[in-house]
Image 1 (cartoon, one colour):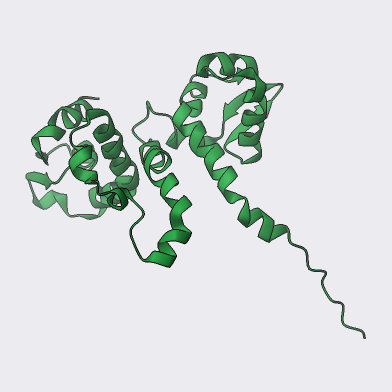
Image 2 (cartoon, rainbow, N blue to C red; image 1 turned 120 degrees about the vertical axis):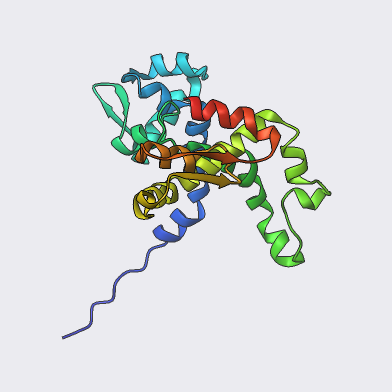
Length: 216
């Protein structure tokens, strides 16, 4: 029997090469608050365009691209969140992980554009490339600091839940989280164990952001 040779096509290679466009579409949606708006109710393209302040020229294509990426649903000309988007990308929910994605969008995404240069030179392509001190600058800008701490909360959510569930907290009465950032860990632990008293410790500049998060 003659061996049937599978025809080779470049589809996967092209998809990989253009993957940045899907990523940036998604990251822009997080930045714009698409999922937070749709957490309230489903909307038409016109309603979302007005809510988000988008130009109508590309708004519908943008929203349909999010449907194609399986982060939005569309039915009867109305857009809505998928279950995952609603749980993890609504800024009003404690399960929000978008802070991490927002940091990727505003800070890290552009650095990947210099990957080839970094591979050839061996030099860092982040803020250090221009002699900047990332953390020194970060702690002087309250808005950027809050975004960074929200990102840390997003990326550490799973770990915080695991610590709250697996550690033998019944043996303890108090706890303190050193380097608490926004306070994801102490809040998660405290909400899971009513008998505990505790808190978080970090730099003074972090305190207002920590207190706002704990109060929420």
